[in-house]
Structure formats: C-alpha cells, structure tokens
Length: 294
Image (tube, rainbow, N blue to C red; front, side, top):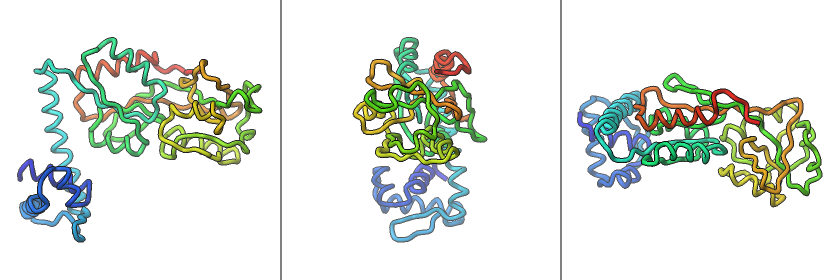
C-alpha cells in the first residue's frame, strides 16, 4: 500500500466524483481510477459504489476512510513538528471562527507578540468548523456556542451578553431594556442558520412564544450593524461587537437574559506548535479567564 494511494482515495471519498477529484489532484481520470483499483485489490474489497463517474463510499470505504485520514493526519503532524523544531521560516496559524467580534483585537495583540507569524482565518458555520476540527485541519476554533467532542479539547473563555441593536430613529430607541416578547412583530437582520449565536437566539425566542422574522440572512456578522443603521431591520448583537461610534442604539434583554459562551477549541491529536501555544495564551489573556463581557 502506497502513500499516494491513500491521498487519492481520501480525495475521491470526499468529492465523490472522479472528474472533480482528478482535476483537484492534477492527474488524469484514468490514472486516478487505476490507483483506486490497485488499492482495492490490495485490500481485497471494493471501497466505492460506482455510478458512472460518481463514486460513493460503501461500508468498507467508510471504515477505511477513518483509518486513512488518521494515518495521513499523523504523518502530517510529524512533518509539522519537525519543521517547527528545525525551521526559522514563519509559521502559518490556521484559524476558524463562528464568531468574529473579538477577533481583530486578539489578532492585533498576537501580532505584537509574534510579528513573524502569519495566520489564515476562515469564517464558517458550526457544522463546517466541526468538520475541520475532526480532520485536524485548523489549529484553533473560536466559536459560540462551545464545540465538544471525544477528540476535541474545549475551553470556555468568555460569557458574553447579547443585546438588541436598533436604528436611532426606531420607535424602541428610547428604551434601555426590553422583554423578548415585545419584539414579536419586529423584522430582523441576522446571520444564516447554522451559526451558533443565530441558532441559540432562535431557540430562546421560540421558548417565549415567537420566531424572529428575518428580512436579511447572511454569513458576515460584521455587516449587521450597518444594516441596522440603514434601517433594514433590528439585530441581536454580541456586546463585544457594540461600537459606540455607530448611529445605533443598544438595548438590554429583560427576563430571558441572552448570554452566550465563547470557547476556544482544538483537536487533541493535532500538534500544537510554539506559535499556536502563544496564540492560545493571547486569547486567554484577552478574556482574562471566565469573565462576563457586558
């Protein structure tokens, strides 16, 4: 069994299409198909159910995929560890976030400490982040709510209140606090379902008797304040995203206080570089442990 066979198998298993996988791997379709066939011959069992150029994992394939991903993951971690110990080249931190309101100051603080380190940040839904974490493809995830799993380490770093943001011309702009049920007839702007805070807010609103009506649903939380300012709708905004310079008024929630947990999560088996350890320290220092952000 060759390493190349495992790499090709994993790509086909994830994409479920020979043409797309061949294009991604920069090889011919015939070469890719022959490599997969040789792997199946070595194993003595078919790994896919084939329909034309579509290939869907069968029971054997599902079981083998877990082992193959683990094998390549461990090899990659060994490679990264040796590189970290011997190389003076800049390290790239792979980060995923479902909440980005505190990310700019965290990255700014980290860059002051380690200006030589580059980082790559992806804003994703909770399900997308879970996939990357289980595959070990990111160093850390900053999320709300926390993400738990047998192969994951999760540390809650902050408890943060959620506020209602309204335009200063809004009929509620004179209020400092409000009951959730009073928002029953309002129109909201928010992120799409699948983002942790959105799902949490929807559940709590439903528990008091209504489902928020969204006039806008996107995947850029930072855009919500500008939409509120433009009087498109009102929004649920984490307190750390509040900006006193914006012409937006913020209202606290009565009774059913909306509080979200912000957590840092990483894959237990993923090698933690020195730069990654320092990033984790910066995050914890920024939040100063378990404090409530108001």
